[in-house]
Image (cartoon, rainbow, N blue to C red; front, top):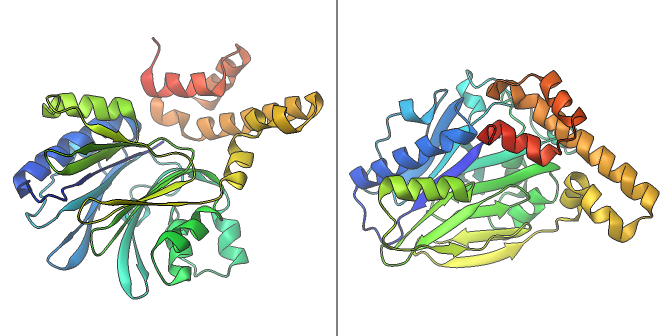
Length: 312
């Protein structure tokens, strides 16, 4: 899929050069989950700025200003909307209550077209499914726990979102896609990335292994807000529709007889396989090869691990 990453320098201890190096290293490691496009968002000079290009992270020149304290990033593996049209890439800009915000998404949403039609949302040239998140927040005319909860409870599919406002507050809306958030209290900053593996490799590359970071827990259904002073406040959203869509097979044994459980698991696996096949070519595997692995008895989770990590 894609990778979310970022830095929150709430202690204002890092120079622009140091932040550029950290973000460049982190983004390059995040290429493991996407090389089609790379983008970042930050506030500088009283303005929200978004810089993104349809290139892998290691080819992007990061020049973070000294006054940018929060940098929100994304590396993309295209599933919907050509990355060559730069407006399809993350992060996306939105406006709520007259104030700008930036949004990035890891995952795949399946009801964006339906929501746009049902809620009479404005037409847009942006083809990426993720942009529905921006439109749903804009419809609420405010950015906060309530509007983010409303957005998260309307979309269907797989997701974790990050949203940054114009005052350097960063929100993490944790769905069923992974997120690893680490706090370095002595250095007074946070780092985050979509997986613990990416975070671990980044810390080794940066030489940040002397101070063991504190992992900040984020569970499915959590909304975390990291303020400009580093304080974290929490909200939640209802995950029942999300879990029913993605993980019906795992919930079924507690609520349904055996026949429904088997049917639910088969349906969920087919959906999962269809999702894997939609982007398998990016990893050099054809959809037919994905079907062949499934026929050999590999579970969808095992096939996804093969795509990302190769054969071990």
